[in-house]
Length: 382
Ligand code: CAA
Image (cartoon, rainbow, N blue to C red; front, side, top):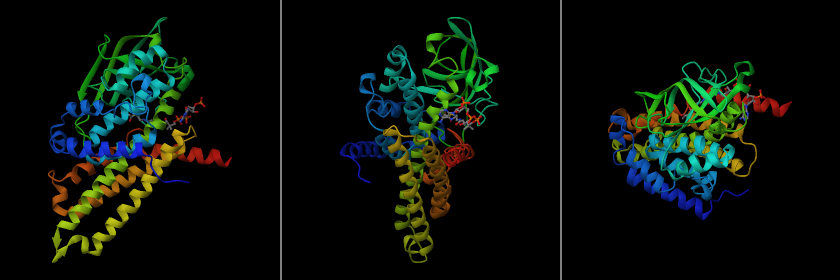
């Protein structure tokens, strides 16, 4: 077993770190406060190849492995989790699924511009009454011969307002339950498709999250991904990989909070010495460093398995579950270390604590991850 990175991994990590520190950090507090979509920063992410990192270069991507992707996700998330969720959704929920299951025509038309970051994509599964219970899709895609008639509402869609391409799960045959669900590629501007107002969120406030409304939208049959009824499995397989990205995001938020706390503790004085010289703070830092390292190893292992084509559903769920809980805990500790300064918006840890919360919710709540893990464990035993 080797724990070393390749030169390419280290190069990607450094590029992401430099980009995050130099180009994302200035303005991140303001973008959060104003809920301002980071249009310029997303453009730069496209130029640097962060929006289609794992896609084959013949489809405009970077041809990198999942390890490179999680290293970049961690660095970007340390500074700006709004940018990293935009990146994560485009890479793992949109590009990956299109590359793996799309037709050649779909790849040329949609994947190429998505991987280059010329446009961005959104993944549309959640509905007002179907979050964790994802098989209960109420959105319908009625078969009309050479097209589907799409009707319904999707909720909490990342990149909802800014995306150009949407992968929409919808029920085509209720009697078949989840086996009647299709995934359709919907373009912005298709008649009957409207974007609802932007959500006013607790965290990742610069990312744009919207509800989407579909009213008699005609989607050509050629825009269906995979065979008839493959939509739910498509969503599950895609989310399994996506969870590695969110685990890396959570890891980045936790390590960002830890690094800021380490730095702060060496400067701030109390009772006549730097607070880093007090055991109360030393123990907090030691616990943060230890749990973050454990999360990092889990994220890397899930990525390593995926890169080798080995099963990774359990490991990606475990990595997301653990890393997101570490993120919530570590950012809370970071605020505690910063004291009153940690509670005001001029200090980054306040935002990181708010950003951490969503990693326990999206792409499957912590409870859903426990369902996935326990089913895998029981199947392994039987
Ligand atoms: N790969 C392939 N197939 C899978 C699968 C996987 N990883 N997981 C499940 N399936 C298949 C099952 O085999 C089953 O198919 P068959 O009946 O044909 O065998 C089918 O899917 C249904 O599976 P379950 O019976 O396990 O379904 P369930 O109703 O018990 O639900 C669940 C399982 C794990 C709770 C699932 O509903 C789930 O993951 N829910 C959470 C959804 C989620 O993550 N939403 C996030 C929204 S996207 C988002 O947040 C993006 C963003 O913008 C950031």
